[in-house]
Amino acid sequence: VVFLGHTVRLLDLDDESEQLVRLVGEAVPPSADSDVLPVSASSPMGEALMKARVGETIKVKAPRGTMEFKILEIVQ
Image 1: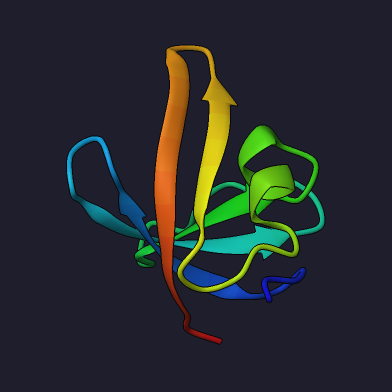
Image 2: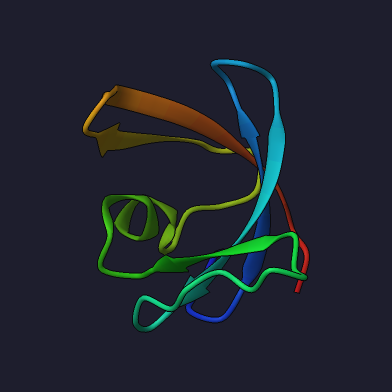
């Protein structure tokens, strides 16, 4: 189950790309030397991730429409 502070590997079901996101308490700018994108728990992505499980597909409402991601693994 995904909780605050976890880093999660996601599969974007739209273009089959993978990305790493870390669920953080408040928005912070991404580090230039890191592959991990910080995501605020209060953002649409953060709310969808919170308490989701590995293998689940989450839907995120974004300005450009609804995006779908599959949770591949909790990295840490």
